[in-house]
Image (cartoon, rainbow, N blue to C red; front, side, top):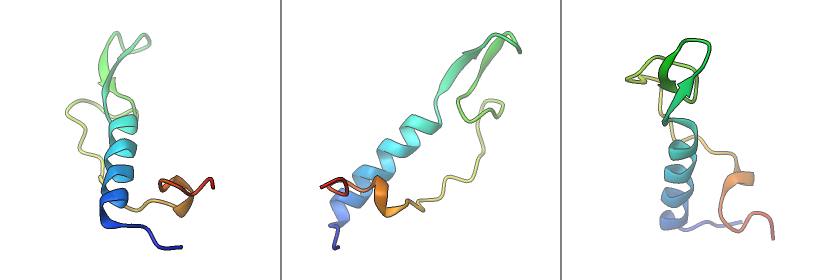
Length: 59
């Protein structure tokens, strides 16, 4: 299966936006990153995506 570079970038951007964004933590009583790290999140934002997350992989 071949995926275009634009589709790969789109999938990477959507994955990072879903995983790393501020959210309210009721246990810590402050805003933290969705991945569980303190803000600013310095998690390794690697673009290693499984092919199942690529656009058009479901078809």
